[in-house]
Image 1 (spheres, rainbow, N blue to C red):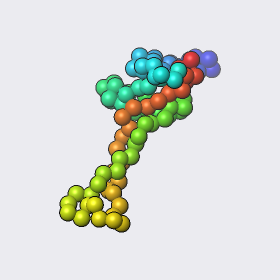
Image 2: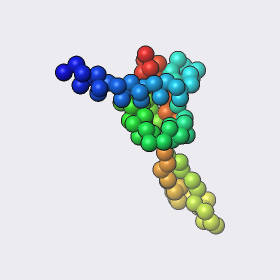
Image 3: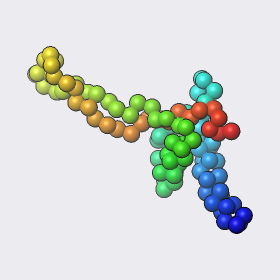
Image 4: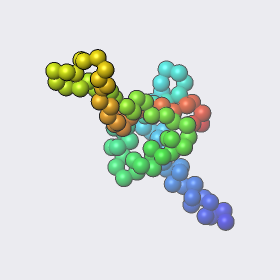
Length: 98
């Protein structure tokens, strides 16, 4: 059994090492990782994002509201068009990397 548990821990350790390599410190004791850096990792990007979310990381600003184009865009009672996009960066708590 110990051999299988070490095999299971190895990929998580590799993902953790990639996260540590890609992170930079923020001003509050935590860490920030840019989504562009995660995507640059290629096929491991999904694993890295999953690891971040499992360890308390939170996406930053996932939704953008844009004004409607055209003459009637500023009319009272019109709602802005809401588009969803991936977050620009993830914020990790300090204890996530220790």
